[in-house]
Length: 130
Image (cartoon, rainbow, N blue to C red; front, side):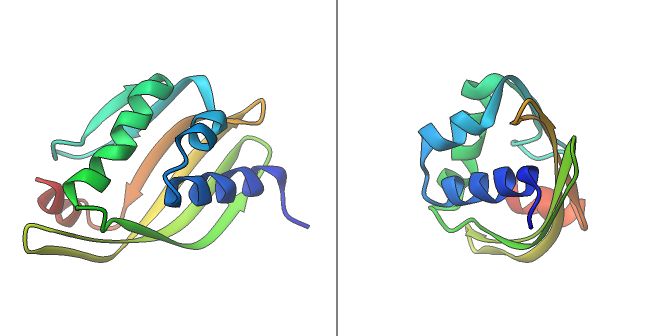
């Protein structure tokens, strides 16, 4: 039996893959904060569903739709879920070929309230998006 927060995160990934903005928005808390570390043009804290949705669209735009997260596993408890992910993308002759990342979600009242990217090779990811 899967935890309800695992189902939430897996459903969010499916909605993201389909570019289903309504479903992605429904999974986000009204005061969601999305932390994107690093030194790339994408690095910032995004606040609220509108900013988060704009951020989520940006990697698709920059990669001409090639960005693809591959879920390896999702672990969830009552307040947090962590998805182990490999990210693939191509951009301007560069490849992100399976960057290992841990996507950490804080869940509150059944919705994603906060998010952090934890990246195996921050320099590689920053160079790719820069």
